[in-house]
Amino acid sequence: MTDLAYHDAPAGQSCELGAQAGPSDQRPTVIGPIGPAQLTAELAAELARLTRLAYAGSDPLPGLPVPDGQFDSPAMVLDAVAGSGAIYLVSDQGRPVAALRVRPAGDCWRAGRISVLPGYRNRGLVRLLLDVLGRQAQAQGVGWLELDAVVERCLPPLYTRLGFAVRSNWPSPDKPLSELTLRRSTAEPTRPVPLGWPAATLTEHDTVFAWLLSGRTLFQVAQVASGDPLADVLAAAATLDRPGLLLAGVDLSCRPAAGLSSRPAVDRVRIFPEGGRTQPEHLMPRRRHAGTLALWRPIPGREIPLTELAGG
Image (cartoon, rainbow, N blue to C red; front, side):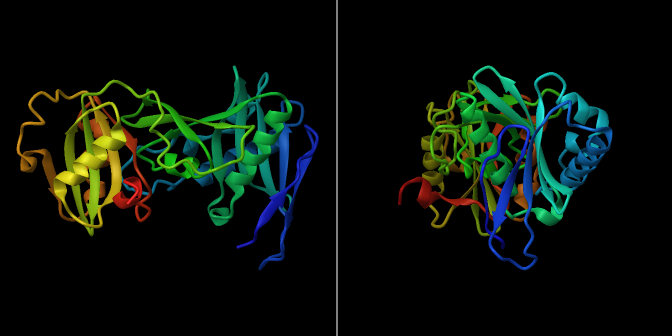
């Protein structure tokens, strides 16, 4: 894979990306900010098409509602830059292959519609876009980058690896999904944030559901909420007393926890022997219970060993 590096350019000009020699020896370019004066109807149409292609079939698990980005239009792109909004894109040989939209919001710049063409994924383009955005934000005295990510689409772990930490969680207003608001400082070096949510302000909840994977078997363990979801997950794992457990998800629920701690462990555990991550309770917990929000879902195959979370 080609390793890319960039240097910043003045606002409104392209930020060139230098590349070590790779299979194609291409030199992508980050261009931005693109505001209303620079955004032509033709470019808006091309960016809308890029977004639709990026979001189509992008979910790692089947059965989720279609992402809004799959219905993007040139009018939506033009609306995104109205007023103080802007677009940053990665161009490869004159063709946009990745993009994001940004708008100032108080003490931060909020990024959205982060899109990468399928053939350009896993090449670090999202990191490059966010790094360029962060440097330009810092140059203008803005201290934070902020974005929202849908938990059930397994998106938050992608951003915590890029240094974003969870600020809050909330229910999606138009779908039975759960979202996180994440932030990253523009002044500090970018470092991965394990899990990302231990310091977040989270919705009130009485019960934590830990989703734990052992081989192909998925366990859901109910635990009385202590105010520390990580501690609750580790307590749930201790209930199972199995080696090699992986963290496949965490839910916060307002379901009453009265009597939960006194119930036998077997009554607090549900077992899904095969294909558990597509079970309705795991796929979309809000559809099963409106008061339950998903807090964490890793991409299948990238689950975290419990021993790492426990410092073991």
